Structures are given as structure tokens and as C-alpha cells.
Image 1 (cartoon, rainbow, N blue to C red):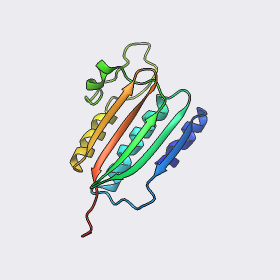
Image 2 (image 1 turned 90 degrees about the vertical axis):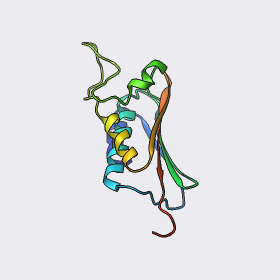
Image 3 (image 1 turned 30 degrees about the horizontal axis):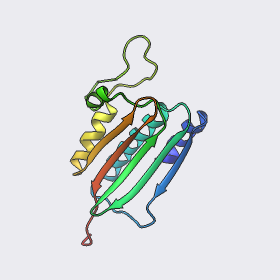
Image 4 (image 1 turned 45 degrees about the horizontal axis):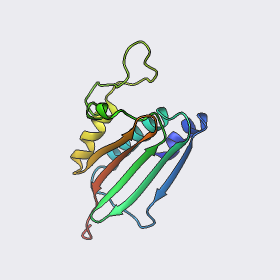
Length: 143
């Protein structure tokens, strides 16, 4: 997914870095849906970042995998965090809206992750960037 968004990042002179666990991580769930979630998170990170970059960190934490998409973008106000996952909701509205989109991506991503037994979280500081974390169960030794 990083390869797919890299050209858009390079066009904006943004760095994309990856930190992926050296040990293989086998997640439970649908790989195509996970790709869809990650593509949405990475695309948003590039879209809402003007300078700096995006980092993807994938780690194994006990019986869960955690994938974090960290950006140095515009960030999200604390009061807007609860609205973020509502369908058809965009935080910046009106004629001056700078960023395009339907407002469905994060809502769909959250539902897809939940259907795989995981969670999607966000931490953000307005003006400094955001971190979206996907936490999903890993397959046990029997698979």
C-alpha cells in the first residue's frame, strides 16, 4: 500500500518511512479489506500533510498486530475527534473546503476493522499531525 501512495507523497515532497517488525505477522481477517483500510489511512495521511512526512509502523504486541500510520499533517481538533468516524462527515465544510472526499473512508475503515475483530483508534494534535492505529488479532500457532 505504501508503494501505491508513494508517488502522491513524492509529488508533495513528503517522505514515507516504514518500520515493519522483522518477524512475520499473520493477521486474522480479510487481506483485501485490510489493504482497503491501509490505503485509506495512507491516502488521508498524504492528503492532509503539507510538509514532513508519513510513517508506517507495524509491530506484534502479544496476540495482536498494531499498524500505526503517523503523519505530520494538519491534525484534528480534540472536539472533532468523535465526529471523525461518522459516515458522510467531513470536518472542514463550506465553500472554502480545501480537501476533497465523501466523508465515508474512515467510517468504512472502522467498520471493516471491527468485522475482523479489531479496533481503529486515532490520536491527534491540531496543527501537528495524527496517528491512526489499527489493532487486529493475529492467527494462532494452529494455522
